[in-house]
View (spheres, rainbow, N blue to C red):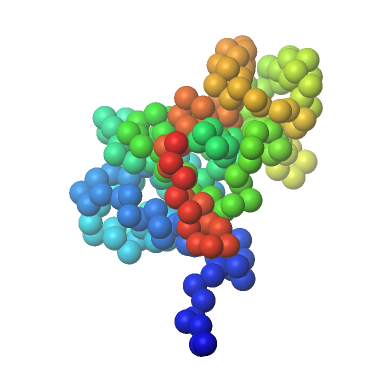
Length: 234
């Protein structure tokens, strides 16, 4: 018997999967609203898709200078976070996400502004490909934005937890964030209690933001898989 054309996405590349979830996220954008927009390669696909309905929304609040430039280039107005009281939705990617919506974020160096925008939103929609879904956070190095003078002390504190912290470089110099600070990337951690871990590290003097998102965890994840976009709710 002749089979209908397959709708499987098994042959799609990671980039094409990012396109799928970027398009799927449009269904969570309400007309007339200001949209919270994250940072990264997957979010760039969402920004490109958002341009198709820019006439229906008021604009966006962006979590990075890079996303702001992309939004403005596509004709989407960008508001300062201080200009809005709340957002209906924040759409962003993740370096890792677990089965409860907890995430590691900050691969794009925008974790502090991402947490600020996420805190304004009533709903956090994570868009990711299936390689980002993990049982326990920690496979991806944990980004931590810090004040430079605290680097040695915080590195020692992570070592006491079994982590290996390295300053993120751009060329041969420390990468400087949009906030004028530096980042540590910490490997070797197994984060079994994300909320407790985020609480603990956030209190260390010199830490600006730790890249565990448990307080601002995702309520929905649109996951690009070989079978198409899978919607996970938490």
